[in-house]
Length: 112
Image (cartoon, rainbow, N blue to C red; front, side, top):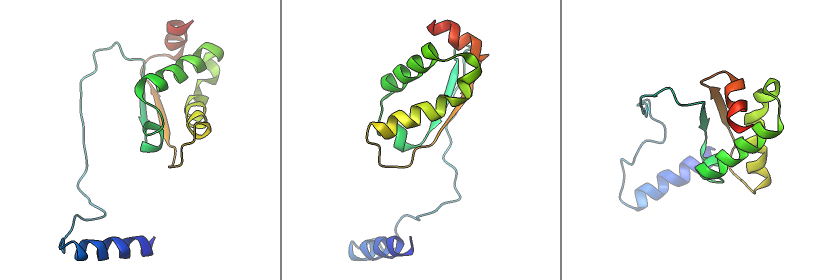
């Protein structure tokens, strides 16, 4: 990792950007929005997932999983989607957290 940082610092100097953008920042990136109660699921995923699938594709994977799985196994949804991303050729890290905003039975009823 040190080698990568050294190369980036050298590149910034060569490009005349001596002060460059910091590699690590304590300034948080935040986003907030209001929920209207119609939401079933919040998916927090890294770019490894979103660079592999668009929103419609993720939705289709969720629908496929929910349609073929009982609500008791919904804890495996993150694993299911990230495995599909890996199978699709994702090369970046794959992290996905699924937060159910309603009882999982509601999501099952939506797709079944």
